[in-house]
Length: 507
Image (cartoon, rainbow, N blue to C red):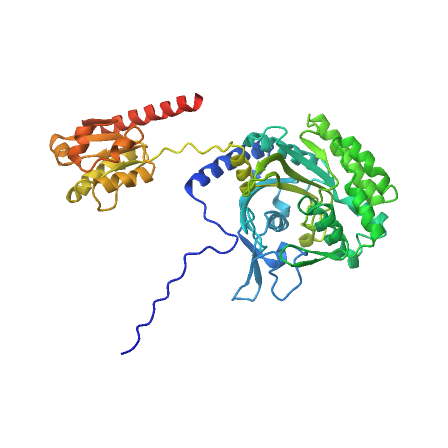
């Protein structure tokens, strides 16, 4: 006798670094996105949407030159013509492609905002996912640093509109040109093609200062560093004297913007590009001060460099300064939840001429986690459904008519679609967080009546109810009315619930 072949059943598992998001979180996310949209539109930015994936060669010159360009991005080869496409790793590179393709028809500067998922082919970890949502604002075609200053102001206003108070966050700014000036003073030509990889390694090492500390950064500026898992990251290969100059640059921080500018002056005194970067920060300081944005909201910090290679001038980060307990119960700072900067060379890749641009991005998932830690999450006002129970399967059409009447009056409602009895239907309504349930048994139908129960007020009693007779006798938090009064009574009970919930929140 032949052995019966075992049926293959795939495990219901998620890819590494991915997650499912349920209704409660989606509700709070939507509320956050609506608030961010308010501020971004208040600043005069208009909406844009671009595809989830792009041709890989459009995403940036900094992608590794490999047969399969998948380091940092998720890529696949099109069957039709053999071109490689990649899931977008941010919303900025697709914007550059859009502007280049539509340049002549766009106003200059072109001011757009966009929100959507982005994907990073990176090693996942606690709170670090391979798919996450960003909310960006960009000005393309504005060469004045007034555009950079404006985005710093937008970042601060956006975080406060989400519910963060001053002292819980800070926008920190720097200028890539100043770091290039420091490298130049250390004997490294930052614009030389042969130094491009070394410069990028230095930038990424500095960008890890908060996570790895000075010792870790010092190793990455030198020969390299081995992490806890044993993986080795090759360093920038700088000489000890050059490393000291970089560390001196990182130590130029201060609580006041003017003090930072003074501390950096001597480090780039002999560098033209460094002096240019200092002047831009001075101009930004004047604009921030004129707008009433003091250092408690926007400050300068030489350690802010941003890891991506396309930034060419001012850069910024949105940093959360409050402490919270991590998964191990330790008090830690929350850290960065967004940032951006100037990228004057990104559109030029397509057009061959300089197109100035600057942008700012908020990591929505990080912002969600921060507001959750502070107890400041706000959910959309979503009305819980009214569930119409089916007590007689032979007359299901009558119950469907009730649902349609409720929906016609704008009441969120649904028909129980299963075949279980009353107790199971009540359990279902409870799991659906139903506001009310509508019940019509044989006796109610014969009398032309219907019973409406408030699920919250009668929750405890409903656990013990076994049948319709017991339900009628209990009559907990319920009303029995004529069929023609169903819609009006449901709306009246929902209004009473909403009022009671509002009073509880106010109390």
